[in-house]
Length: 249
Length: 249
DNA sequence: CGAACTTTTGACAAGCATCAACACGTGTGG
DNA sequence: CCACACGTGTTGATGCTTGTCAAAAGTTCG
Image (cartoon, rainbow over all chains, first blue to last red; front, side, top):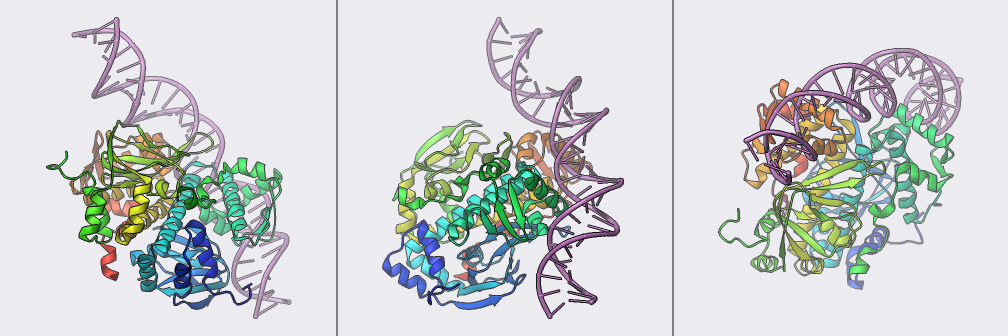
């Protein structure tokens, strides 16, 4: 729900500014970026692997996911993006997409010409710095996912994902911390955790049986946060939730 | 072996410049960064999880690896670093380490005060840009590792890792493309692929039996590159080997 | 009201883990 | 120089976690 004619990119900007403060001029330049809006349905492609990047997209409403397809046809979801996220800073700067980005729900993206994004990062060091910090946090999440998939059992992986979402969605300010809509089917959850849909189903049942969560449709309610944290071996440090640049600047 | 008194950071700089060109002044500023050298033995810690970052390290000689420890004591290696890599740009900018970095072999690191690294990225946009690109490539490698661990079987995972190393070490110019030293024990290989040492051993035997590789101590010889690429479902695109900024600038 | 998708259940199979033991090379101290 | 500990690679036996296949029950939506 767009607040009273808020500029398209203001939410994205707020997110970046949490990482590194902008000057008034930085803000003006950022909001003046030429962005064209595009509505997409669930399942619509934002970026396709091997595409040449022409636009850098910011996710304004709705959820999206990045994924890669491996040789035997298997799909691995490598991250989930929430409203306000820059999608494909990577593709904008690296020129060619090394993975796909698809909408999880219907939503809107703002498309900014790659050149404009590159230029603003160069001409406004604070903006470049915020993009670097944002990218570093993404990297931290990727590393945690590697550890999650590589070294935790199925039940823990799913509990961990539920914890991560609770924290990340809390950051968007639109969800109760312990009761949120997770727009993923069990098959998609499986693709995110390196499991199969059937097994995800059994593990979710196990979490429910133990009173850690309950689910209704795609709404997850966390009944026992501490228990879920323990089950998922979760610690929020890797999300770098605090305004990290403040402490060193 | 240091070439005729080459400046400490010149190799690291060359690596960054492949991503984005520096001006003569950028180069001078980069090489003038205050760096103190530190020798480390195999197994020595470069960074410990939860450390406050005071220095940003560049790996000058030797190999290192990043890893996380999960709740049950399992270890997951999330990346391997080769000479010339910046270790922990992430920790420098994010302030607190979310994972460990340990030496795989004996070697040397250059330690630069965090503040100096932050300042140079801000005052020299080309350097900041190169750091961003470097970080984005790291992210791309992390995503491929997620897909590798999450969706490929044991044999493919190992074949994939061997392919990745062949390409990355080729980039350092110090190794024959198809015959290189891989300073990882089978247990460490297991920690990098989300497997156990015993199973890694069996899968390596399978790769040898099929004539794809041969090994002697820790030297890997690729006997059949195409076969290994197929077995590992490998494609080098995710390493973004080309000078990517050239094509869009 | 039916088509398409998602969740759930059961039976069974397979890949990988676990545990234990042995072989081999290397370095170290007596 | 030998004895020994130590790390690493190798092998075998066994079992558990997770995958596979198939079908039924519930949900969404035109």
